Structure formats: structure tokens, C-alpha cells
Length: 153
Image (cartoon, rainbow, N blue to C red):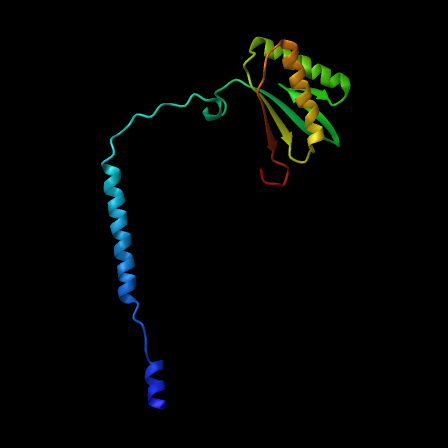
């Protein structure tokens, strides 16, 4: 009986042919994929003209920055600063309206400090929509978060 147990425990499976087969299949599929790609004709692809596909910096846009300075919220547009009070937001809306009159199709980017809550960004959105209503046009608003001092984007 001890001999029967010794024979059973001495059974090994040789996996070398299975590994060889796996590598042969990999080589086969790589070669077939390469040959099938060479049979495709070259197709001239159209160049995208959608705003989302244009590289940064090529299209005109307005950028309203929402920043936190010493605990207070400050809006900037083209280097001009606007406070988050009523008169500052009215001045921001009129500055945006002036720029929208010259180019009504220009999109407006809101670049907000990541540390700010939405309630700090909402007045900028309201000022932009008020400016667009004043001009009588529709405006595209894009919101993005700026990287904080130590955080990731």
C-alpha cells in the first residue's frame, strides 16, 4: 500500500508543451493582426472643426477667473479685478456684455480655484448669463478648476 501512495504522489504534470503552445498562439495572432492592418487602404481623414477638438489657444474666448484672495472671492477678466459684491458683479456683467457685443459667439470659460465652493462660482455664472441676456445672445459657459497650491488638477 505504501508503494501505491508513493506512485500517486510522484505524478508531475509537464507544462512546457502548454507554455510553448501559448507562445505560438501569441506569435500567430500578432502576425495575423499585422497583415490585416496592411491590407487596409489609406483614407484621408477629415480635420475636426468642433470647438471641443480645437487646440487650446487657437480659438477666441473670454476667461473669467474666480480666485480666493485672503479669504475673499475675487473675479478677474482680462486683468481687471471685480469684487464679489453687488457693484463688482454689475461691473463684471457689463464688461462681459461689452466683449460679447463685439463677438457674440465667443465662449466664456470660468476658471475657478479648486478650494472654492460652488456658491463662490455661481455669481460669475449669473453675471455671464445676465450679460448674454443684455446683449441678446446665447453664450457657451465652460467651467474648469485651477490646481491648488499643493493639490493635483
